Length: 265
Image 1: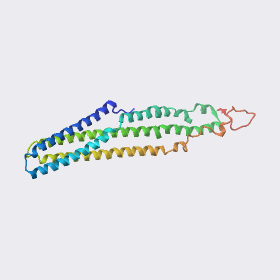
Image 2 (image 1 turned 60 degrees about the vertical axis):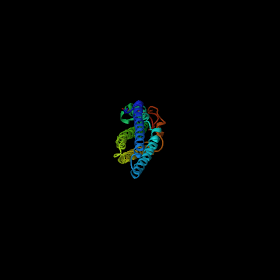
Image 3 (image 1 turned 180 degrees about the vertical axis):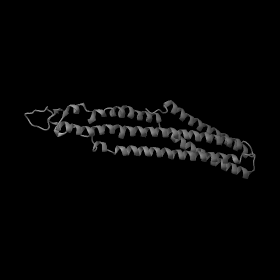
Image 4 (image 1 turned 90 degrees about the vertical axis):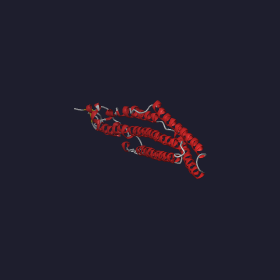
């Protein structure tokens, strides 16, 4: 089983992002209030520049809110992915692979006691059966487990990066609030805020591209494995019967038949 964030831990991560987004809104409100107050205290040409910069800042903040609202509405759920991956590993891959020994010709107790054409046919059947059994874990359950685990980890890292970027954005807006609180600092305030917004949007785009890259790779891995049927000799389970197994009686010296089973000397 692969450990990872539980429901509560992931909810707390999302809640932290939501809390930081509310702080972004609060700081934006403070900047607007400061700018409205300062505009009546500075010449028109200075005020126009401050107003224009503030409008750009608010446009970027609205864009950030729209983008994050989309993600917060559908944040993904790593705990569910990890749980499903562990189920494939623990309840499919492990128990199925544990039965592979029963299909190992070298470990078969039957072949220790019997020989002949039918026994040889039985031995030939065991090999493909064992290969197919082992493939259930190696080619399917392990790959599914790995894909779900990697995707879950990518989602957690994605939200972690958003939280870090939001912390930086809040820091930039706090600086912008302080700058717009004074007449002499007001012109630089919107510029500081805009720079913080652009840095956040760049981090958001990078994180989004990384997440999409991980999910695309894992989706490709799953599709490739589901298209591989080499272990099964086609799109079906290997046959477990052969014509020479139709006669399974003990060797009868009076009836020559090379398909009879007979005890090893």
